[in-house]
Image (cartoon, rainbow, N blue to C red):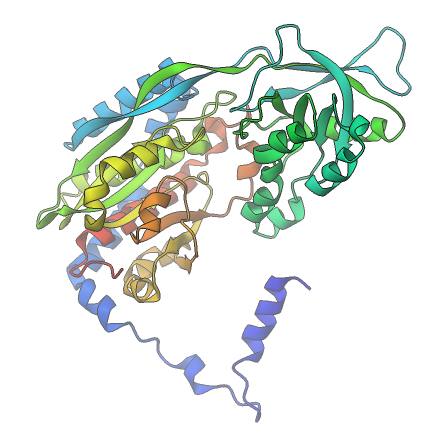
Length: 485
């Protein structure tokens, strides 16, 4: 029995008294908290409904995303495309009448070479042949020598197994370690894609370090994702001073099968590297508040992307949702009491330095941040929000949940940690932090792969997400009383 089914059974069983009578409290009319009633007068509730409906009929966000992915393309930090995207988003926000500035973020340019791999010796090999392996380099690690490396592959299924093998140095030292750890598709199908990703991605993030400690000459990880279309998933890997890459799930299975029969040797070329330091920027755009302009509500997404795809779901979608928040408020001639700050973060993918520089540069203003919202989980149907805030603040926001109920996006689940990466420093300092909660049924099929392209975004679902960000962002900025901290 799954935990979901158990919860449902408990939910059904709980209202029944020992006499088989339903508890009266279950059927009592829900009571809105006094704080929510004070914070959301009738006019504001009406404006939230107007924002929601306007977003559902507006393709501003999709048109902006089409430009970012089609005309600009992939946006690795430090690249000409990343710089062009910064300028484009800044110009578009200026057109909306926002006060725009670019805040510098030092980055390193990511330079991908011709990543290749092939099996050159393996059981049952036909003389004179090799087998191609689909591979992509991971960010953060050292390249191979120009001519690549050739070494035997040691397949492991966990860090513990690697440590056990490492006790006999000839089993790991001088070899290429392959972490063959599958993404749990059953968890993902049951609505726990994030948990499945977290379990597998630690091998991408720390596998190189663990392999290097045992004397390996390179580290490979099975692609961290839900679809097996021979699409390797790139991403950040902690610098271990050895080459690190990801291979397609199908190829990981092939190598594991062959290695169970005998020795497997691979030739690996990963010339991808980081270039010299470069200057990039966070785009910061303020729609000034009418009564409390010093108080800030952030709506945001990160502008940089990996180079394999065009960064549609990760995270051009989040950026354009934030842009549309400003567009809708301006078009409907609304005037929030607090400042709405649109941020297109830079360098989330390779170190999150954009958020760190923002936190440093705005340290004296953190207390004036009323809330921060980020979307960085694609653009599938939104269920609501994950939020790091207290229960009193959650109760204040019940009118927002009511406004989003018609599109099925009215869940508000409290979480212990920041729901998104770029707003984490603010969340740690007590700023209420919200992340749009998408279904993510297909997100990890395409995330960090060459298939992260515009066609993966359903326009109607993007409109729903834009509605969520606009409604919540405006609500937080115009509440009669600020959100409790």
